[in-house]
Image 1 (cartoon, rainbow, N blue to C red):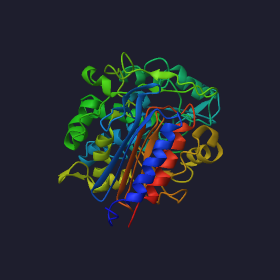
Image 2 (cartoon, one colour):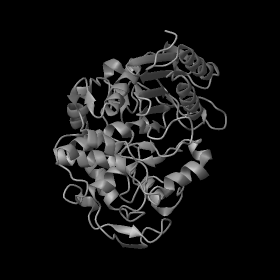
Image 3 (spheres, one colour):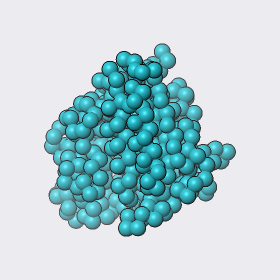
Image 4 (cartoon, rainbow, N blue to C red):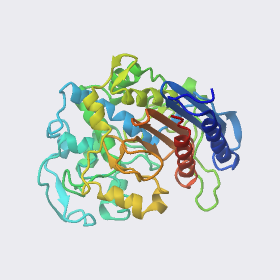
Length: 409
Protein backbone atom coordinates (compact mmCIF):
# COMPACT_ATOMS: atom_id res chain seq x y z
CA UNK A 1 0.00 0.00 0.00
CA UNK A 2 2.80 2.46 -0.80
CA UNK A 3 0.39 4.57 -2.80
CA UNK A 4 -2.49 4.32 -5.19
CA UNK A 5 -3.87 6.88 -7.55
CA UNK A 6 -7.32 7.26 -6.10
CA UNK A 7 -6.83 7.22 -2.33
CA UNK A 8 -4.34 8.62 0.17
CA UNK A 9 -0.63 8.02 0.65
CA UNK A 10 0.39 5.75 3.54
CA UNK A 11 2.80 8.44 4.71
CA UNK A 12 0.02 11.03 4.57
CA UNK A 13 -2.36 8.91 6.65
CA UNK A 14 0.29 8.26 9.29
CA UNK A 15 0.99 12.00 9.48
CA UNK A 16 -2.75 12.62 9.85
CA UNK A 17 -2.86 10.22 12.80
CA UNK A 18 0.18 11.91 14.36
CA UNK A 19 -1.41 15.37 14.07
CA UNK A 20 -4.68 14.19 15.64
CA UNK A 21 -2.79 12.34 18.39
CA UNK A 22 -0.79 15.48 19.18
CA UNK A 23 -4.05 17.38 19.89
CA UNK A 24 -5.39 14.59 22.10
CA UNK A 25 -2.09 14.20 23.95
CA UNK A 26 -1.96 17.96 24.59
CA UNK A 27 -4.83 17.46 27.04
CA UNK A 28 -6.96 20.03 25.21
CA UNK A 29 -9.02 17.60 23.07
CA UNK A 30 -10.48 14.69 25.08
CA UNK A 31 -11.18 12.51 22.04
CA UNK A 32 -11.72 12.59 18.31
CA UNK A 33 -13.13 10.45 15.50
CA UNK A 34 -11.93 11.29 11.99
CA UNK A 35 -13.09 9.70 8.74
CA UNK A 36 -11.45 10.41 5.40
CA UNK A 37 -12.59 8.95 2.13
CA UNK A 38 -11.43 9.12 -1.47
CA UNK A 39 -12.05 7.01 -4.55
CA UNK A 40 -13.75 4.24 -2.61
CA UNK A 41 -11.04 4.09 0.08
CA UNK A 42 -12.18 5.01 3.59
CA UNK A 43 -9.86 5.46 6.57
CA UNK A 44 -10.99 6.08 10.17
CA UNK A 45 -9.09 7.16 13.28
CA UNK A 46 -10.63 7.07 16.77
CA UNK A 47 -8.38 8.54 19.46
CA UNK A 48 -8.79 9.56 23.09
CA UNK A 49 -11.73 9.12 25.41
CA UNK A 50 -15.41 10.00 25.89
CA UNK A 51 -14.68 12.16 28.97
CA UNK A 52 -11.84 14.62 29.47
CA UNK A 53 -10.63 12.67 32.52
CA UNK A 54 -10.71 9.24 30.90
CA UNK A 55 -13.62 6.85 30.63
CA UNK A 56 -14.49 4.71 27.62
CA UNK A 57 -12.40 5.11 24.47
CA UNK A 58 -13.70 6.96 21.43
CA UNK A 59 -14.94 4.51 18.81
CA UNK A 60 -15.84 4.66 15.15
CA UNK A 61 -19.54 4.40 16.10
CA UNK A 62 -19.48 7.11 18.80
CA UNK A 63 -22.51 9.38 18.44
CA UNK A 64 -21.80 13.13 18.35
CA UNK A 65 -23.93 16.25 18.68
CA UNK A 66 -23.52 17.70 15.20
CA UNK A 67 -24.50 21.27 16.13
CA UNK A 68 -24.31 23.49 13.01
CA UNK A 69 -22.96 20.59 10.96
CA UNK A 70 -26.67 19.62 11.01
CA UNK A 71 -27.34 22.36 8.45
CA UNK A 72 -25.94 20.65 5.32
CA UNK A 73 -27.92 17.46 6.08
CA UNK A 74 -31.24 18.91 7.22
CA UNK A 75 -31.53 21.08 4.08
CA UNK A 76 -31.92 17.90 1.99
CA UNK A 77 -35.55 17.58 3.13
CA UNK A 78 -36.39 20.85 1.39
CA UNK A 79 -34.54 19.76 -1.75
CA UNK A 80 -36.76 16.65 -1.97
CA UNK A 81 -39.80 18.97 -1.93
CA UNK A 82 -38.29 21.12 -4.71
CA UNK A 83 -37.61 17.98 -6.78
CA UNK A 84 -41.25 16.92 -6.37
CA UNK A 85 -42.63 20.40 -7.15
CA UNK A 86 -44.29 20.53 -3.74
CA UNK A 87 -42.28 23.73 -3.22
CA UNK A 88 -41.04 26.23 -5.78
CA UNK A 89 -38.07 28.52 -5.13
CA UNK A 90 -40.02 31.69 -5.82
CA UNK A 91 -43.24 30.71 -4.07
CA UNK A 92 -44.24 33.17 -1.35
CA UNK A 93 -44.09 31.36 2.02
CA UNK A 94 -47.27 32.96 3.45
CA UNK A 95 -49.60 29.98 2.80
CA UNK A 96 -47.40 27.72 4.99
CA UNK A 97 -45.83 30.32 7.27
CA UNK A 98 -48.62 32.88 7.75
CA UNK A 99 -46.76 34.20 10.81
CA UNK A 100 -44.28 35.75 8.35
CA UNK A 101 -46.82 37.56 6.17
CA UNK A 102 -46.80 41.41 6.05
CA UNK A 103 -43.36 41.89 7.56
CA UNK A 104 -42.00 45.13 8.98
CA UNK A 105 -38.28 45.80 8.48
CA UNK A 106 -35.94 47.88 10.63
CA UNK A 107 -34.92 51.18 9.04
CA UNK A 108 -31.30 50.35 9.98
CA UNK A 109 -29.77 47.08 11.25
CA UNK A 110 -29.23 48.64 14.70
CA UNK A 111 -32.58 50.50 14.93
CA UNK A 112 -35.06 50.19 17.80
CA UNK A 113 -37.71 47.52 17.18
CA UNK A 114 -40.49 50.01 16.45
CA UNK A 115 -38.42 51.99 13.93
CA UNK A 116 -39.59 50.09 10.83
CA UNK A 117 -40.85 50.31 7.27
CA UNK A 118 -43.02 47.75 5.42
CA UNK A 119 -41.15 44.93 3.68
CA UNK A 120 -40.63 45.69 -0.02
CA UNK A 121 -41.90 42.22 -0.95
CA UNK A 122 -43.03 38.98 0.69
CA UNK A 123 -40.57 36.29 1.84
CA UNK A 124 -40.03 33.46 -0.67
CA UNK A 125 -38.92 29.84 -0.33
CA UNK A 126 -35.61 30.87 -1.94
CA UNK A 127 -35.04 33.46 0.80
CA UNK A 128 -35.56 30.81 3.49
CA UNK A 129 -33.38 28.13 1.84
CA UNK A 130 -30.48 30.54 1.29
CA UNK A 131 -30.76 32.14 4.77
CA UNK A 132 -31.55 35.56 3.25
CA UNK A 133 -35.13 35.99 4.52
CA UNK A 134 -34.17 38.96 6.70
CA UNK A 135 -33.43 37.67 10.20
CA UNK A 136 -30.74 35.53 11.78
CA UNK A 137 -27.88 35.47 14.22
CA UNK A 138 -25.40 38.21 13.45
CA UNK A 139 -22.31 37.95 15.61
CA UNK A 140 -21.32 41.44 14.49
CA UNK A 141 -24.65 42.85 15.86
CA UNK A 142 -24.54 41.39 19.36
CA UNK A 143 -26.12 43.81 21.85
CA UNK A 144 -28.21 45.52 19.18
CA UNK A 145 -31.97 45.66 19.90
CA UNK A 146 -32.95 43.02 17.32
CA UNK A 147 -30.33 40.49 18.50
CA UNK A 148 -31.36 41.06 22.12
CA UNK A 149 -34.98 40.36 21.10
CA UNK A 150 -34.02 37.14 19.25
CA UNK A 151 -32.34 35.84 22.42
CA UNK A 152 -35.13 37.07 24.74
CA UNK A 153 -37.70 35.19 22.63
CA UNK A 154 -35.72 31.95 23.02
CA UNK A 155 -35.45 31.46 19.25
CA UNK A 156 -31.94 30.00 19.29
CA UNK A 157 -30.72 26.67 20.69
CA UNK A 158 -27.69 27.80 22.71
CA UNK A 159 -29.61 29.24 25.66
CA UNK A 160 -30.34 27.55 29.00
CA UNK A 161 -34.04 27.47 28.06
CA UNK A 162 -35.33 24.93 25.54
CA UNK A 163 -36.51 26.12 22.15
CA UNK A 164 -40.35 25.95 22.17
CA UNK A 165 -42.42 23.70 19.90
CA UNK A 166 -42.65 24.84 16.26
CA UNK A 167 -45.99 26.70 16.31
CA UNK A 168 -44.98 28.71 19.39
CA UNK A 169 -41.52 29.31 17.88
CA UNK A 170 -43.22 30.67 14.75
CA UNK A 171 -45.55 32.85 16.81
CA UNK A 172 -42.57 34.42 18.59
CA UNK A 173 -40.64 34.83 15.33
CA UNK A 174 -43.70 36.60 13.89
CA UNK A 175 -43.64 39.22 16.66
CA UNK A 176 -40.23 40.53 15.54
CA UNK A 177 -39.41 42.85 12.65
CA UNK A 178 -36.84 41.73 10.08
CA UNK A 179 -33.35 43.20 10.37
CA UNK A 180 -32.95 43.37 6.58
CA UNK A 181 -35.30 43.42 3.61
CA UNK A 182 -36.12 39.92 2.25
CA UNK A 183 -33.33 38.74 -0.06
CA UNK A 184 -30.96 41.50 0.97
CA UNK A 185 -28.47 39.87 3.36
CA UNK A 186 -27.30 36.39 4.38
CA UNK A 187 -27.82 35.71 8.09
CA UNK A 188 -27.05 32.69 10.18
CA UNK A 189 -29.06 29.95 11.88
CA UNK A 190 -32.71 31.04 12.03
CA UNK A 191 -33.29 30.26 8.34
CA UNK A 192 -31.96 26.72 8.86
CA UNK A 193 -34.45 26.16 11.70
CA UNK A 194 -37.21 27.78 9.65
CA UNK A 195 -36.60 25.24 6.86
CA UNK A 196 -37.65 22.47 9.26
CA UNK A 197 -40.93 24.19 10.10
CA UNK A 198 -41.61 24.81 6.41
CA UNK A 199 -40.95 21.16 5.50
CA UNK A 200 -43.18 19.95 8.33
CA UNK A 201 -46.07 22.19 7.31
CA UNK A 202 -45.81 21.32 3.62
CA UNK A 203 -45.68 17.56 4.28
CA UNK A 204 -47.95 17.24 7.31
CA UNK A 205 -45.22 15.15 8.95
CA UNK A 206 -42.76 16.07 11.66
CA UNK A 207 -39.44 17.30 10.23
CA UNK A 208 -37.71 14.23 11.66
CA UNK A 209 -40.26 11.79 10.17
CA UNK A 210 -39.78 13.29 6.71
CA UNK A 211 -35.97 13.33 7.00
CA UNK A 212 -35.97 9.73 8.23
CA UNK A 213 -38.23 8.50 5.44
CA UNK A 214 -36.56 10.37 2.55
CA UNK A 215 -32.92 10.82 3.60
CA UNK A 216 -31.78 8.83 6.66
CA UNK A 217 -33.32 5.42 5.94
CA UNK A 218 -32.48 5.33 2.20
CA UNK A 219 -28.85 6.22 3.08
CA UNK A 220 -28.63 3.74 5.97
CA UNK A 221 -28.08 6.62 8.46
CA UNK A 222 -29.36 4.54 11.37
CA UNK A 223 -27.78 6.63 14.12
CA UNK A 224 -28.92 10.06 12.90
CA UNK A 225 -31.83 11.89 14.52
CA UNK A 226 -32.78 14.63 16.97
CA UNK A 227 -32.13 12.61 20.14
CA UNK A 228 -30.24 9.50 21.29
CA UNK A 229 -32.37 6.50 22.35
CA UNK A 230 -31.95 5.52 26.02
CA UNK A 231 -30.28 2.21 25.14
CA UNK A 232 -27.63 4.01 23.04
CA UNK A 233 -26.72 6.83 25.46
CA UNK A 234 -23.43 5.14 26.42
CA UNK A 235 -22.26 5.95 22.87
CA UNK A 236 -22.69 9.74 23.45
CA UNK A 237 -19.73 11.57 25.02
CA UNK A 238 -19.96 14.43 27.48
CA UNK A 239 -19.98 17.78 25.63
CA UNK A 240 -17.64 20.38 27.13
CA UNK A 241 -17.54 24.15 26.85
CA UNK A 242 -14.22 24.93 28.54
CA UNK A 243 -13.83 28.10 30.59
CA UNK A 244 -12.12 30.55 28.19
CA UNK A 245 -10.06 32.07 31.02
CA UNK A 246 -8.82 28.91 32.77
CA UNK A 247 -9.38 26.14 30.20
CA UNK A 248 -11.25 24.14 32.87
CA UNK A 249 -13.48 21.47 31.27
CA UNK A 250 -17.03 22.55 32.07
CA UNK A 251 -19.69 20.00 31.08
CA UNK A 252 -22.20 21.77 28.82
CA UNK A 253 -24.27 18.64 28.23
CA UNK A 254 -24.14 15.22 29.90
CA UNK A 255 -25.49 12.14 28.11
CA UNK A 256 -27.84 11.10 30.93
CA UNK A 257 -30.80 13.47 31.36
CA UNK A 258 -29.13 15.87 28.91
CA UNK A 259 -30.57 17.79 25.97
CA UNK A 260 -30.30 14.84 23.58
CA UNK A 261 -31.61 12.16 25.97
CA UNK A 262 -35.27 12.72 24.97
CA UNK A 263 -37.10 13.96 21.85
CA UNK A 264 -36.93 17.78 21.75
CA UNK A 265 -39.95 20.08 21.51
CA UNK A 266 -38.32 21.67 18.44
CA UNK A 267 -36.53 19.59 15.80
CA UNK A 268 -33.87 22.12 14.85
CA UNK A 269 -32.38 21.79 11.37
CA UNK A 270 -29.88 24.47 12.36
CA UNK A 271 -28.18 22.46 15.09
CA UNK A 272 -30.27 19.63 16.50
CA UNK A 273 -28.93 16.45 14.91
CA UNK A 274 -26.86 13.69 16.47
CA UNK A 275 -24.94 11.37 14.15
CA UNK A 276 -21.83 9.30 13.49
CA UNK A 277 -18.85 9.55 11.14
CA UNK A 278 -20.20 6.74 8.94
CA UNK A 279 -23.70 8.21 8.69
CA UNK A 280 -22.29 11.59 7.63
CA UNK A 281 -19.97 9.89 5.20
CA UNK A 282 -22.94 8.21 3.49
CA UNK A 283 -24.66 11.58 3.11
CA UNK A 284 -21.68 13.54 1.77
CA UNK A 285 -20.72 10.68 -0.56
CA UNK A 286 -24.27 10.81 -1.95
CA UNK A 287 -23.74 14.52 -2.70
CA UNK A 288 -20.41 13.75 -4.40
CA UNK A 289 -22.22 11.10 -6.44
CA UNK A 290 -24.62 13.76 -7.75
CA UNK A 291 -27.53 12.56 -5.59
CA UNK A 292 -27.32 8.76 -5.76
CA UNK A 293 -26.49 6.12 -3.12
CA UNK A 294 -25.72 2.54 -4.19
CA UNK A 295 -27.64 3.11 -7.41
CA UNK A 296 -30.67 4.65 -5.67
CA UNK A 297 -31.53 8.28 -6.41
CA UNK A 298 -31.99 10.34 -3.24
CA UNK A 299 -31.84 13.85 -4.75
CA UNK A 300 -31.72 15.03 -8.35
CA UNK A 301 -28.36 16.12 -9.70
CA UNK A 302 -29.61 19.72 -10.22
CA UNK A 303 -30.81 19.85 -6.60
CA UNK A 304 -27.35 18.79 -5.41
CA UNK A 305 -25.73 21.37 -7.69
CA UNK A 306 -28.01 24.08 -6.32
CA UNK A 307 -27.11 23.20 -2.70
CA UNK A 308 -23.38 22.88 -3.28
CA UNK A 309 -22.62 25.95 -5.41
CA UNK A 310 -22.63 29.55 -4.27
CA UNK A 311 -26.06 31.24 -4.23
CA UNK A 312 -25.02 34.63 -2.83
CA UNK A 313 -24.08 37.96 -4.37
CA UNK A 314 -21.19 39.85 -2.73
CA UNK A 315 -23.78 42.23 -1.21
CA UNK A 316 -25.78 39.36 0.33
CA UNK A 317 -22.57 37.85 1.64
CA UNK A 318 -21.20 41.03 3.23
CA UNK A 319 -21.97 40.00 6.84
CA UNK A 320 -20.30 36.58 6.43
CA UNK A 321 -17.23 38.21 4.94
CA UNK A 322 -17.09 40.73 7.80
CA UNK A 323 -17.28 37.94 10.38
CA UNK A 324 -14.57 35.87 8.68
CA UNK A 325 -12.18 38.72 7.96
CA UNK A 326 -12.74 41.29 10.72
CA UNK A 327 -13.86 39.14 13.65
CA UNK A 328 -11.34 36.30 13.64
CA UNK A 329 -11.24 36.49 17.45
CA UNK A 330 -14.88 35.31 17.38
CA UNK A 331 -14.63 32.83 14.50
CA UNK A 332 -11.08 31.61 15.34
CA UNK A 333 -10.42 32.02 11.61
CA UNK A 334 -13.27 29.74 10.53
CA UNK A 335 -15.58 30.87 7.75
CA UNK A 336 -13.06 31.92 5.12
CA UNK A 337 -14.78 29.85 2.43
CA UNK A 338 -16.37 32.78 0.61
CA UNK A 339 -19.74 31.52 -0.60
CA UNK A 340 -22.87 29.78 0.67
CA UNK A 341 -25.15 27.42 -1.20
CA UNK A 342 -28.16 25.96 0.61
CA UNK A 343 -27.44 24.71 4.10
CA UNK A 344 -23.69 24.87 3.65
CA UNK A 345 -20.62 26.89 2.84
CA UNK A 346 -19.07 26.66 -0.62
CA UNK A 347 -15.49 27.69 -1.37
CA UNK A 348 -15.44 30.41 -3.99
CA UNK A 349 -11.77 31.35 -3.67
CA UNK A 350 -8.58 29.64 -2.62
CA UNK A 351 -8.15 30.81 0.99
CA UNK A 352 -6.36 27.77 2.40
CA UNK A 353 -5.39 24.21 1.35
CA UNK A 354 -8.88 23.28 0.11
CA UNK A 355 -9.79 23.99 -3.51
CA UNK A 356 -12.64 26.02 -4.95
CA UNK A 357 -15.89 24.03 -4.92
CA UNK A 358 -15.37 22.25 -1.59
CA UNK A 359 -18.65 22.30 0.38
CA UNK A 360 -19.80 21.56 3.93
CA UNK A 361 -19.81 23.22 7.34
CA UNK A 362 -18.53 23.16 10.91
CA UNK A 363 -20.36 22.90 14.21
CA UNK A 364 -19.86 24.74 17.49
CA UNK A 365 -19.62 21.42 19.35
CA UNK A 366 -16.38 20.52 17.55
CA UNK A 367 -17.65 18.94 14.33
CA UNK A 368 -16.58 19.45 10.72
CA UNK A 369 -17.77 17.79 7.51
CA UNK A 370 -16.84 18.75 3.95
CA UNK A 371 -16.73 17.10 0.55
CA UNK A 372 -14.57 18.17 -2.37
CA UNK A 373 -15.70 17.35 -5.94
CA UNK A 374 -12.33 18.24 -7.51
CA UNK A 375 -10.56 15.54 -5.49
CA UNK A 376 -13.61 13.29 -4.90
CA UNK A 377 -12.73 13.55 -1.23
CA UNK A 378 -14.76 13.58 1.99
CA UNK A 379 -13.47 14.47 5.43
CA UNK A 380 -15.39 14.26 8.70
CA UNK A 381 -13.89 15.30 12.02
CA UNK A 382 -15.88 14.86 15.24
CA UNK A 383 -14.96 15.86 18.78
CA UNK A 384 -16.92 16.93 21.89
CA UNK A 385 -15.56 20.38 22.61
CA UNK A 386 -17.41 23.66 22.20
CA UNK A 387 -16.00 26.82 20.64
CA UNK A 388 -15.66 28.62 23.97
CA UNK A 389 -11.93 28.06 23.34
CA UNK A 390 -10.01 27.91 20.05
CA UNK A 391 -8.86 24.28 20.54
CA UNK A 392 -11.50 22.63 18.29
CA UNK A 393 -10.90 25.19 15.52
CA UNK A 394 -7.15 24.52 15.70
CA UNK A 395 -7.80 20.77 15.56
CA UNK A 396 -10.02 21.19 12.49
CA UNK A 397 -7.55 23.44 10.74
CA UNK A 398 -4.71 20.96 11.29
CA UNK A 399 -6.93 18.06 10.17
CA UNK A 400 -7.77 19.69 6.83
CA UNK A 401 -4.24 21.02 6.29
CA UNK A 402 -2.81 17.53 6.81
CA UNK A 403 -5.55 15.70 4.91
CA UNK A 404 -4.93 17.70 1.75
CA UNK A 405 -1.27 16.73 1.87
CA UNK A 406 -2.24 13.04 2.07
CA UNK A 407 -3.72 13.04 -1.45
CA UNK A 408 -1.36 10.97 -3.54
CA UNK A 409 -2.42 11.33 -7.16
